Amino acid sequence: MAADDILLDAEERMEKAVEVFRHAMLGIRTGRANPGLVDSLRVDVYGSPTPIKALASVGAPEPNQIVVRPFDPSTIKDIEKALRASELGFNPQNDGRILRITIPSLSTDVRRKMTARIKELAEESRVSIRSVRRDANKAADVEKSAGSLTEDDCDTTKEEVQELTKKFETKVGDVAKAKEAEVMEE
Image (cartoon, rainbow, N blue to C red; front, side):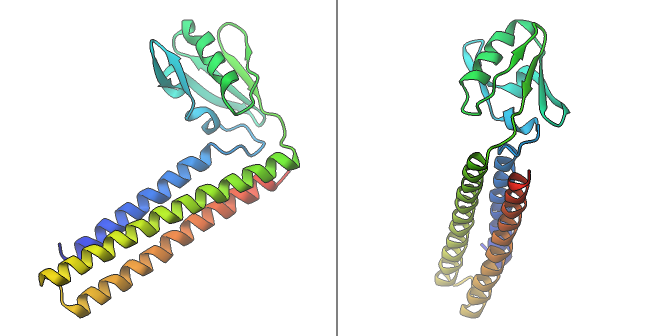
């Protein structure tokens, strides 16, 4: 594997780690209605856990309300049950055709917990990025010992991998900081 291939692979994997983190941030409550809050929710319907977005359209017509419109009206009870059982603390109102979820404002204690969760997820993402760095450095060492990379090329590759690591860790930090600010604003 050439140095360029090692760097390209590392960059792609680090970008995926950042994207996974960004997606996880969609599920963090901010006091405003966001369809992303319920996207990851799975509903036990038709004998298997199914993502809610495969069963219904989810929208936020108002800043403090999420509306769930099931494609199949017979699944509304299952969706309501899943929403009530989730750890999100929602109490959906069922009118027979759609579910309305009023998002309560967050208390200071809940905001602190959300901020702690953001930090936890950010650190998991950073660990993932560092793992990619370790794998890329190991690949460079293997190529050096195989003779396809010179020692200077190996060192240069490792330096570039470190620069990528810093770049993507900074991206994770920026996303986390923005989400923390969003959660803490009232």
